[in-house]
Length: 302
Ligand SMILES: Nc1nc2c(ncn2[C@@H]2O[C@H](COP(=O)(O)OP(=O)(O)OP(=O)(O)O)[C@@H](O)[C@H]2O)c(=O)[nH]1
Ligand SMILES: [Mg+2]
Image (cartoon, rainbow, N blue to C red):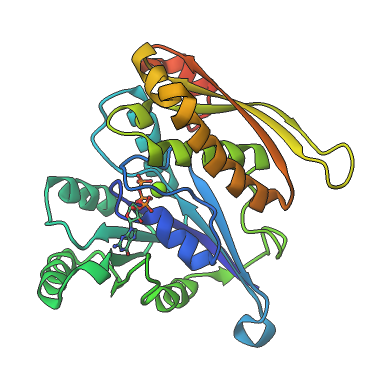
């Protein structure tokens, strides 16, 4: 068996989670068009028992929060999670957004990578949106750094070159154990995945500052009492301000209903059965700057 760990790193919103999901062929990490969607380290497991004529392959992907200049304690904590993930892996996959020009944020990421030991591969993502000139410009810029063993242009959204990239990453896997059973794509607990699905819908349906100050806590999770009955889930959505609570609930409760329905449909798919989902909204003033809350809610990498 060949196995190992791959850290997926890069600035916010470049498509890290989309690319991980695409490499796994399954949705594990939530995604949105807004930066700072991923707030924890999310594990995605790819197993191919047929690999190498039956030798077998297991690649453990670690999707990380986007590297950025933090503006609050939550930001610092998630940055730390991302940076910590870069050590101890077999290979680092840096992802950049091909539609953006190289800037100071990218410079900072390169500096950070210079201090890491693992070999590195670069993926220039969103290639579906750019022409060859833009691609070449970025390619040359990153090639110059001498940091990367290989550079690929990919589209996580369309799937272009993604398999090729995954095959290349497999080269870095070493003779080793099968870390996880071959039939699971993540070992994140169901409760966590459910809370993430709800948070994803909030990220998608809300605007401006509101979605970034949202935390979802699963209050209760009751398995169906008999076959065919619904799983009963109740969750609390915490937001940072009273005014945000109103926005989340919406006129006559319409917004929250929409979020609830979209989340329920996806949770039903995940669990393979009916779900009864109740959502409540509470305010926790300025929690993103509370060290204690961030720790309690599992955003601090210990
Ligand atoms: N056109 C296009 N859009 C993409 C591609 N990959 C990702 N996106 C979009 O880019 C946005 C961000 O994707 P995510 O996967 O959430 O990005 P991320 O890097 O995980 O972001 P954070 O978790 O916030 O750090 C989403 O709207 C995706 O649909 C791509 O190859 N092409
Ligand atoms: Mg992400």
